[in-house]
Length: 335
Ligand code: NAD
Ligand code: UD1
Image (cartoon, rainbow, N blue to C red; front, top):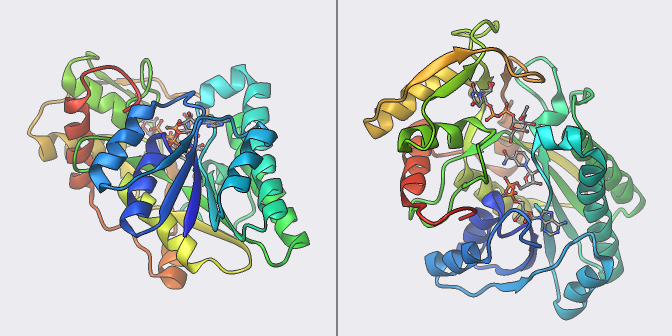
C-alpha cells in the first residue's frame, strides 16, 4: 500500500517508516521538522535500503496537504504529527489545540475528498485519566489534566463522528502506552531537545554523564515500591502495531491499546537498565511531579485477540537499545 505518514521524521514515526518499508509498503512522509530532522529519514533509508518521498509541510496547511493527496494514490494515512510536551501544552494551550486538532481535521477532510479508506491515529493512554488499571478500551474516558491530553481525546471524538457519518471509512484510534528504546542499529531513536521530561531519555542521559543523577518523582504512591508504574513498550513493537492495524482495519472506528499489559515501577526500570547495560545509575528520591498518576498500564488483550498482535521485546531489549542509541548520538538533537 501507499501510506502517508505524517510526523514520519519523529521518534515513533521514523521507526514505523522502517516497519512499513520492511513490510513492503511505499512510504510518503509529511513533516514540518518542528521536532525532528530530515537526517532521520536518510537513516531510515540506510536501514531499509528503500526510498521515501518526503514533503516538508505543515499538515495544518490544507492546501499543502491536499497537494500530497493529489500527487499520490494514497491507501492509508498514519497521523503521528503532533506536539506532545505536556508541560508546554499547559503554557501554550492554543498552540497545542490548533496543531493537534486542526491537523487531524485537515487530514480527515483530504481522506474523504480523495477517497482514502484508512486512517490510523496516534492517541495516548493519557485519555484514560485516573481510571482503574489495567486500562480497557471501552472504559469511559476521564478528563485530562492538560491540553495535550484533551487534544487527543477531542481528536478521537472528531474522528469517531466523521466515521459514523461515513460508514465506508476505517479509523483506528491507537492508544500508546510508554514507548521507549530504539532501532537495534543505533541509527534512529529518541533524542529530545533540552532536558528530557520522560524517564527513559533522562536515564540514558544520566548514564552518559550529561545529567548528574535521576530524580525519582515520589516514592509514596500505592504501588509495588512506592514509585510510579507505567507500561513501557519497545518502539519497534509499537511500530509493528501500526503495520498490523493497516492490514486488519475494517470499516468503522476501532480503538486499540498498544502496550505490553505489564506495569513496571521507576525503580524496577532503573534496576533493569543497570543490569541490562552493566552500569551504575545514581538517583535520589524527589517530590511527586504534579499531574502524575500512580499507575498506568494496558489491558493489551484486545489487539492480541482481534489482530494477533502482541509486544515481543522485553525490558532488557528496551534498555539496551535505548542506551545503544544514546551512546551513538554525538551531534545534537532529533536523530
Ligand atoms: P515526535 O515529536 O518525535 O514526532 C512528531 C513529529 O511530528 C515530529 O517529527 C514533528 O516535526 C512533526 N510535526 C508536529 N506538528 C506537525 C505539523 N503540524 N505538521 C507536520 N509535522 C508536524 O513525537 P513522537 O514521540 O514520535 O509522537 C508521535 C505521536 O504519538 C504524537 O502525536 C504523540 O502525541 C503521540 N504519542 C506519543 C507518545 C510518546 O510517549 N512518545 C505517547 C502517546 C502518544
Ligand atoms: C508522560 C506524559 C503523558 C504521556 C506519556 C507518554 C507527563 C506529566 N505525562 O507520562 O501525558 O502520554 O508521557 O509520552 O509528562 N519519572 C521520574 N523522573 C523523571 C521522569 C519521570 O521519576 O525524571 C517518573 C514519572 O513520575 C512516572 C514515570 O517516571 O512515574 C514515567 O514518566 P514519563 O516517562 O514522563 O511518562 P508518563 O508519566 O507516563
